[in-house]
Length: 248
Image 1 (cartoon, rainbow, N blue to C red):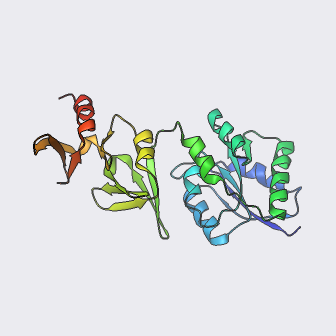
Image 2: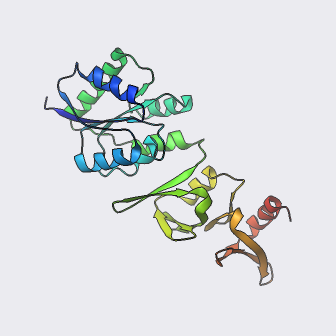
Image 3: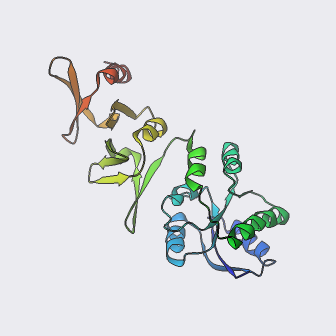
């Protein structure tokens, strides 16, 4: 078997040390880089193109899950996690291996055995999106990460003014600029905090904090005027919901 080039990404020094120590018994694996945060880890994956990545899930700024959709060429991935029992079921259902911290050397070896089998036949992680969707089913977003060519933008939720449908994409509008993201309106309607965001139309989700006023136009039609000056239509079915949310 040819050498497998590996990267370790974990914000905990002890966790990286443990993976490195366990790998001493596997001479066919060469560690080519280590990173302690998602930003540099993502850059390392895209530039170095490793065969295998040991990827922590819970990291500041950019989590392991948020990294997934930003990777150019998907390597073998072994996730490491100390959290989210509901996430473990998603890993199992999607046959992507994971190590639940603290993990033993025996369990570590079992995960590597799967990698060796897949690497030998050239089968890389192809069901990452299904895995990510499975884990995200009950999660509430605390930020949105967008990749624009080689740039990674982390958008704070309080900076989002509204989200608009763009066919199979959405356009995220902030006070300063807009970002195109390959996600559905349904996803954001489900995963954004409902105390701050509301879907007012099949094409729009608004940040309630940016609503300046609601005004009538036409016979039975309404629209919101946002602090940015944008005016967005409210569908009839959503108007009563919005009135209830805003208590007017």
